[in-house]
Amino acid sequence: MNVKQYLKKNGYEATCVLEPNSIWAEVIVAFENSETGKLDETSFDIPNPLTEAGRNELSDLFNVFCKENVLKANKVTAIIIARMARTKDELEA
Image (cartoon, rainbow, N blue to C red; front, side, top):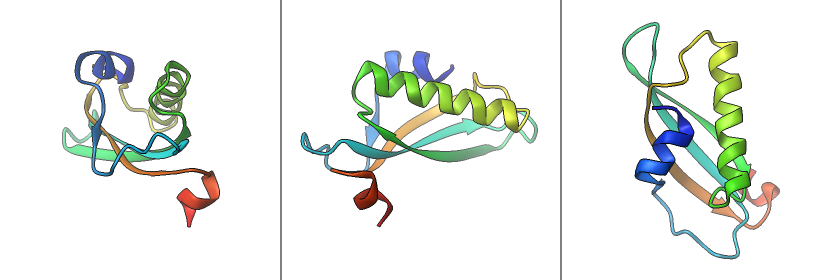
């Protein structure tokens, strides 16, 4: 499953409280590494992850990550919102 397919079927998991005033999120994408066959993960800081625009940005970022690392983008096993903040600076603090 790619990012969009995974989110459509399963939605996000969350290890934090999903605050309505928080705009930025650290989102972890867990996937099966197509080179090693082992589970792996990467994370992205994105705005508005619960909107369609946020989901599209996450999908685009993961696809670029996979292309740069010569990995298949259709091995997503989990998508987790790890942290949320009102601003990117707060998220990175």
